[in-house]
Amino acid sequence: MEQVAPKTVQTQGSGPLLVDAARGKKPLSQQVLERIRAAGRISRSDVAKDLGVSPGSVTAIVSGLMEAGLVRENPKPHRDFSRGRPPVELSLVHDARHVIGVTLRDGVHNAVLTDFTGRVVADATLECPTGRKEPDELLADLNALVADLLSRSGLERSDICGVGIGLPGFIDHQSGLVHWCPFLRDKRVPLGDFLSRNLPFAVYLDNDVNLLAMAELWFGMGRELSNFAVFTIEHGVGMGLILDNRIYRGARGIGLEIGHTTIQVDGALCRCGQRGCLEAYIADYALVREASTALEWDSSVARSSDQTLEILFDQAKAGNEAARTIFARAGRYLSSGLANVIRVFDPELLILSGARLRYDYLYAEEVLGGAHRFSDWIGRERTRIAVNTWGDLVWARGGAALALSAETDRIGAGL
Image (tube, rainbow, N blue to C red; front, side):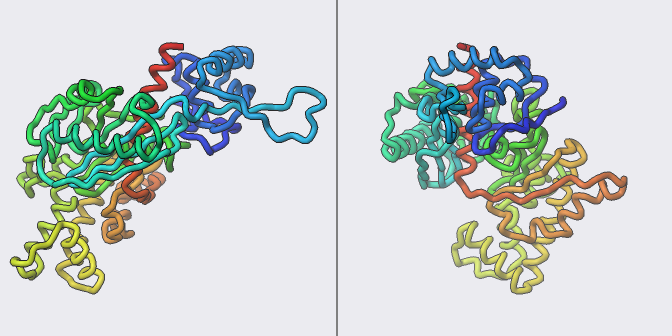
């Protein structure tokens, strides 16, 4: 689908900057609202130009949005207003809505509270015991995070219209069903329904890497792109895909599980229960397993996974051949995974993200070169690959983007 980049938009806003040519399913009022949010500040005439509609239509819609308390006017600085009304720009009303974004992980959860523009008002982190949990334990963690955010922001629960929650595993976004998550005790947990019944605002559940892709689309490197992929390496391996400015989830909501594609028949055991998954060769626990087997360490000394990885990295940097071999082997598997993403989806940009990318062995020139080998062989232009490590809160910001997107859809349906 053709995408058009408006020339008039300023970049201080949030959300996709490209105007989707196939946007007819959205009400025009919602398109206007989204264009104002993406721009940050923009005039009525520029909204009309960007959307390809008449200025009169935009003026009428903006009047309704202002009456609803969603949009306001901002006079532009001008030296001489004597000849008429001063020019104005439109922006969203910051406190018209508030949402929460959360990423749930084994051992630590992160959350942000944002206003209607996507600006972070407060953030919170909750450390918790590792191990498999029941839904009511996750609910208690969520309530603790929400209470922390509200105390930091001065808001009430009634001020929150929705929460976007990301967690690893196979998540059906539409139904809220968690087919499998590495830190839930059971499979096929109706977590979305459970949380919706026990929280006083709308709940939107999704795979955490989908939310990372949404964070890039709303706030990061993907704002000016219509098609890009995010590939992440942390406790697991994940992928998020943006097609035509929208997150792609597959027919049943659990697509793009690149970490659980089989790269070695009857290979290493993955935490999902299958053998030979890509994740089983390059994720945290795969490197720890390799280190524990290949390096001559005192087995009586207890080490956390993070400690083991740090020691492994330090030894590789110091020239330990066994440590270097572990990273080199993981790099070859990563190269194959990236090459498959490029060949199957041909994204404009492939963004590598995740805490493990500080280990530069995993994105060394030879690793990225291997990902491009097929493109080089057929003589086509290489796909751009970029490394973007924002820190832990970016995942939660993707949850906020999910909640804001859903709230905007709801507003659009009611205008």
